[in-house]
Image (cartoon, rainbow, N blue to C red):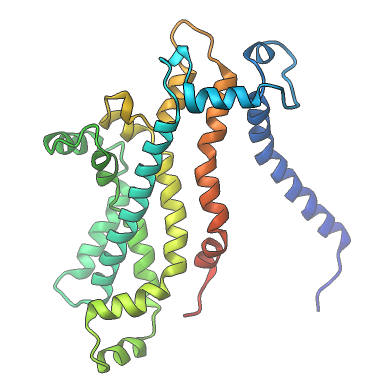
Length: 282
């Protein structure tokens, strides 16, 4: 029997709406700022309603750029970030699912040792191994390339662990049935494991795409040409203009545009994402 507690229900809704306001308010203020001329943002109080420069500001940052940043439009930066995020997401899933498949379904010496060796790499973030990684990338002539942006970041101990734990829950009878039907290991992987893993893949794809999209330190190190600048680097460049007042209306327009690809990915894959996190039945 479910008890009816109006006070607790109301309190729950209050906290939910409070959380929504805390999350949405900064985004709303950024959007409003992106629709005003700079002068409106430099005097108090700041505006709380959209202005008249919405189309002008967004066309400027997308197509034309502006003099303070050398006239660089942001669409090439968006493209660089998209290629990097997509490459990291797909690469991480590809490497991780094959690694987990090998660890779970193949019997070879020290397989658990190798798995835990992979898992221990979680203790070594990019910041710790960035110098040797850069040296290797430079020796392979990967500077200022999409391969250099993505390849060093596609290994993922977290994704390998999650796929391993999922594969361990697959019934052994399914494996035996596939073996009796004469299915090869890769046929079993392709026809059975991969379809079963689609929701997990979707959940990990969203997480890894956002992870790649938000990368700042590694692109800053591996790229020296402005043509390879990512959108996160571009925002930092806009906000730190020497001897000039940052043009916050253009910066906020860039921020809003930078949010759109991850938001679109989450919206279109939300159902699979949630299902991949909570699904327990095979």
